[in-house]
Image (tube, rainbow, N blue to C red):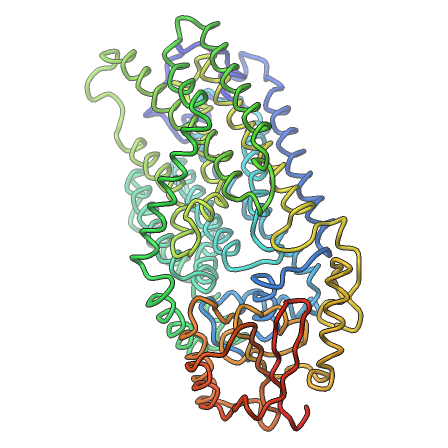
Length: 634
C-alpha cells in the first residue's frame, strides 16, 4: 500500500510535483516495466478486506438481536408513521420510512439496509480517493492492488459507525453516508479534470440526489458540507484550467440530480409544503433551547480540550516518537527502534486500560484510542514535511512547477480534514463522539501521508504504517464488541434469545428473555386499548419505545424530550389545533414522573383531563410508569 514498501526507502528519487494526471499515469507505467511489482499491496488489501468482512459478518448475525427502547425505537416509530406524522426535527423518516414499509416493518432487514448503505458509501469514497491519489503519486506501483489496498483500508474503518450508534439506521449515519457520496464525487471530478476529461454524467447527478437526501436527514450539517463541496469543485476546476462550458455542464447535471430527487420526494412520497413548515418550526424550538448555538460551541470546546489532554497524557510516547522519527534519518536503526518501542508501548497501553477496544458504554475511552494514532500521523507528517523542506531548500529553481496542482491538492486535503466535523455540527453530544464516525476521511489522509515521497524514511514509514494498521485493528475490535457484546442500550447477541410473544411490532427481533416477558405483559395489561394499531399516544418523556411496541401513533413529535418539556407540549398543542385525527378514540398519556402545570395546560387544550382518566401503573419494562387511559374503555 505504501510507496516505501514498493519502491524502497530512498528519499533521493526525484519527484516533479507539478506533474499530475495523464503524465503521472504514463510515468507509473514506464517505471513499472523496469521493476517487479511488490506483493505488499496485495497483503495490505487482504488484511483490510479481512477486517471489513469480520465486522460485516457480525452485523448480519446481530441484525435480529436486541432492541433499544430509546433512540432506536424513536427512529422506528417515526419510520412507522412516516407519511402521516410530520412533527419532526429531521426528515430521515421520508428516506427510511418508505423502505421500512416496503420491508414489511422488518427491523432485521432494515438493519441490513443500513449495512449495505454504509459499506457502499465508504467503498465509493475509498475507490474515488485512491483514483485521485494515483495522479498525486507518480511512483506508485502500476497495479490495481494499490488502489484496492487503500480503498479496503478506508472501507474497513466504516465499522466505527457501529461503535455506539443504534443498530437501526438514523439521521446521523445517513448524513455521513451522503457526505461521503459528495466527497467521493468531488474526488472523481478532480481526478478527471487532471486527466483533462469530463466526469461521467452519473457522478454529478448522483451528487445532486445525495445533497437532497442529506438536507432531509440533517439540514444543519448539509448546509456546511454542500457549501464546502461547491467551493472545492470551483477551485479544482480553476486549478485544472477547465473551460466554463465544462463547469456549466457539471453544475447543470448536479442541478438535474437535485430536481430528480426533489421531484421523487414531492410527487411520490410527501410534498415539501407538507413536511418543511413543521420541520422548520421544530428546529426553531430546538435551537432556542437545549441545542442553542452558544451552548453547543461551549460544549464542543470543553470536549475538545478534554480529548487533547487525554491523548497527550495517555499516548505521549507515541506522539513524541512521531516527531522524532523523521529527524533520525541518518540513524535509521535508532529511528526504527524508537518507532517500534512507541508502537509497542501504545499496544500495552490499550491492553492495560480496560474498555479502549469496547463498544458504546466506553465511548469516552475508545475515542482516545482512535484519535491518538491519528494525532501521531499528523505530527509525523508535519515533522517529515519540515525535514524534507529544509533538505530540499535551494535545490529547485525559483518559479519551477505550477501552483495549480498544489492548490487543487490543498483544497481536497482540507475537504477531507473538515468533513467529519462538518457532518457533526448540530449534535448535542461532544463533537469528537460524532466526528469519530467519519474516521474514514481521516484515514484517507493518513494513507496520503504514508504514500508521500517525503515520508519514505524507514523509521517514519514503520510508525505511520503501524499507526494506520492500529486504527484498522482497533476499529474492527470496537465494532465487533459494539455489536456482539455491548450494542447501543440493548442486550448483546448471547443474551438476546427470546421472541416477544403477542407483540406484532417486535416479531422480527429477539431480545433478552426478561425484556421479552416485560413487553408481553405490558401489552397484555393495555390490550383493550391497543388491540387496533394506531392508537394516539403521548409518551412523556423519552418513551418512544413503549409507543412503538404497543403499535401506537405519537401525538406531535415521536420523541418527547425530558430536557425540553416546552418543545414537547408545543408539538402537542399544534397537533390538536391542526387535526385531532384520533376522533372519539382519545389519546393514551404516559408519564414516569409527576405531571407539571405546563403539561396539564397542553392536555386541557386538547380536551384531555387526566382527572377523568383511569390510571394503570406499570412496573415493566420501564419502572414507575403511569398510563392514563380513558375511563370509557378503548
